[in-house]
Length: 185
Image 1 (cartoon, rainbow, N blue to C red):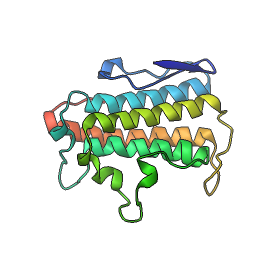
Image 2: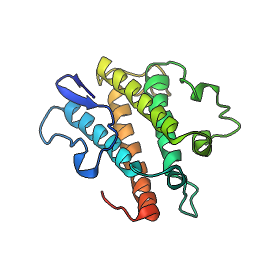
Image 3: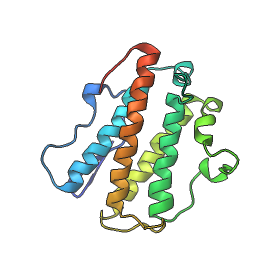
């Protein structure tokens, strides 16, 4: 599924994306097209890293870290919702995040991954991506967020999300290699 925003394609993450099928950022285009191309690429990279794994594999940490691929999916879901809906729009976090006692467990999204079916966690992330894409489609990059200490622009938030995915996709790459030997950028 894709929507067009100012001439660039925003793709929802598609089940079954393989490394070579990821949305490639355009080599030529305006700032928005290139930046959103990189965001789509990073989201597709996460999908690629979790593709084909069962729950036991998605919940397998690589010590000494306790990080898991499914925890990572849930973390990126709350990060999407937090930046685009909570910070940029000034709205409350949607469920399941709204009812979490974050004071009791700051890393609840990571720790709760084993309590939910895999499909539910992936759907949670995909729904967060869809909500984020809707925010991006409806707003200009120069618009400032409703909340936040410095009220960052939508441009800053989108670029921060690319950084967030890039960093965590490095983690995902190492976790996936430890699980079944699959490697890739």
